[in-house]
Length: 278
Length: 293
Image 1 (tube, each protein chain N blue to C red):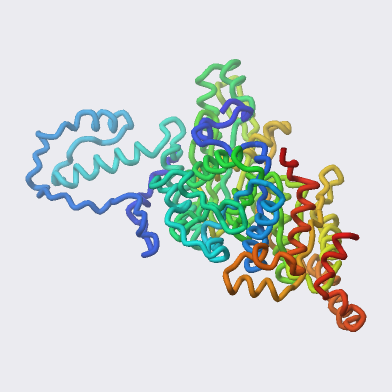
Image 2 (cartoon, rainbow over the protein chains, first blue to last red):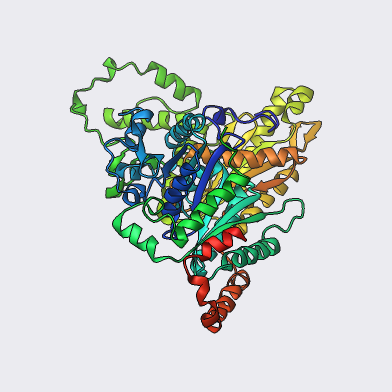
């Protein structure tokens, strides 16, 4: 290295994460597990598909993937086969109920839940080849701030953070936002409050989080953090019903309160981050 | 000049059952040859001996030394040579990579804080250009031995390349990282380096550092890359300084928590108070009303 102004030869051998996150890739993440990330990903995908978008949901929770459980799919070929070179990417893309496509991780992916150079390169290759084919790629990531989650999120142009109005979930969401701001210089995070018990509480929670972030994290006025309230999904018995029956809520009971809220999320996204389908 | 011998850590590497899935190397190969049958005359040891002799090591078989012991001594000498940088006596890049690899194992299993520092002598090229390469080599040697004196026995220092060094600091808590790196930087800045009877030089170094992500198994490449980014920052912000990557802060202070939940508690209280009047809000048509609003 000459004077530190050229990068070390060591890092030239490893492909770099693209400097600009890929457009149209939305990461659905959360600080804590069990707040409904996968449920939101699948149903939001259906809502977007219904509005004419070509949508793919990528099961990027390599360690604890369960999109297949939510959608009641039993795939023969999964992301695991693509990673191990046993199948082509095309063969692993499946049609899901609800009119969108899915790329399921498969149970063997737990072996890839650590970020190695191989996982990183393969992931990058897969995402890059998916992006041109779809209007929206939703990445259902794991919870928290493991290397794999942070890497997956770094590839996305938008972060949709799912949280429930509970102290544990909000603390973890807040902590995760801190890391995303610090490590990835994220300035905009979109918050979805799931299992909201009172209309308007999602907006109030977002405002509260924003205030704490402004006070403790975004102390530099040159680098503000913009927490956007994307929407709230009310507590709804239909959600539990759909999950227990392993049905897609947006397909069977789209008019229930939670279903209408998710349809509204899709419309909001369309207005803000997803380019109108030509 | 002190030398830093490889402590043959590799053979002592142990794997837990779950990690047996990917044994990286197999050091316990049993040779199906009776060593007493090896005749030294049949082995071509000239190259090995020349290498060791060049390093001022005794290559003669001593009186009473068995063939096996003699061979072992030659092999040990070669191993050490292969892990050491000849100019500075520090570990070389190969040894550094294997220690870094091992640190990742430790961090993944124990959550220990391990700091990686990359250090680069500022404007080293101008020393070579103005005072010649012998002066440059002398600077490298002096900086190397001074750096080695700054460290604890458990730390690993290596010459990473050219005028760049790397230090692995195990068990170095994030609150101490900056202080340690600053102490190293100041020590070098204060070091007089006599390169000839008439000339004493002083150099500064830039330091970039990053912690291994705790509890997860990352890769050496990513770790080095993060430290390297910080070194780049230190260089571009004017050299002679330390830049450490902020470790992932997952802790949320009591003050922050209080502010986060204050609203929830109020919200909860309101829900109870207003339950009767809010009841229609829970009706299914509510979401539609909000959409139209």
